Image (cartoon, rainbow, N blue to C red; front, side):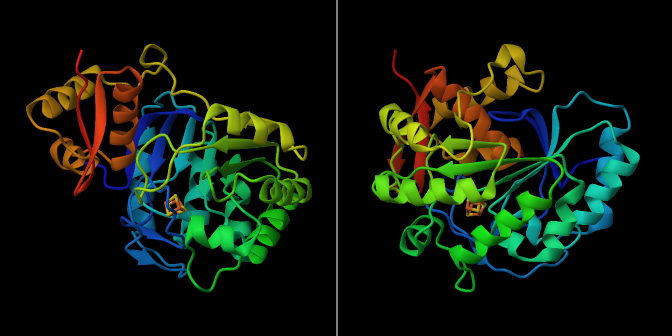
Length: 313
Ligand code: SF4
């Protein structure tokens, strides 16, 4: 059986071995973040509906999980904002009823948590990771480029209400974009919001792969260290390196070799590699990240975005 809604398992920076569930078509989201690894949002929406069949997703999960594969998490993530899918609550209930041994994570931009029904849908998960990159409206709009109906105040109120009632863990992701949200003023506002939200931890993140727009640069270690020291509302972790391929059972050597052979022939974009391998973009991104970090490939900006090519030795 081919899987249309599951991807991976991928070696995830934060979640170990994670099976992905993708509930929306590429790229359906309420934000159009400048750092988005999935590219530009083509369907900017706040509408909740069954973008893919809930029954189809449940069928794929039942089939995949029946042999009890080892997984650290089953994670709702992928080609956009997973909580826009109206069936996410039903899918979480199904997993908790039929496969209770597995932990469930939801990566969300947090924009839908202002809706009490979304908060209710996520109550059965074990871990929710919402994003909060700015408190001031201009910085929020510059980084996340949200749907016009969304205000940052409503997002923060929604995340706060969710974290108050949620019995699982909340890790708040703060994505730093130098020049927009790394100044002391904005970080002070973010820290006040963190103090109100009371997440279990804050994960400071920055660009490690080309994002949707070319001008976004990664924050350097010194900046991340300064910001981490300013955050007092929760424990802070700077998102670390990818787990090594030796410790990740889902790392397929032959896929990395295939990508390497492919870019040796001709430089390729992540989308070219997706087309050639048939893998999900998130999965391709993890392999690209590994090949970049192990200095086997390098990247160059071209007309169609970032191209990957072998690193000269
Ligand atoms: S919220 Fe996530 S999926 Fe949506 S544009 Fe931002 S990074 Fe991409």
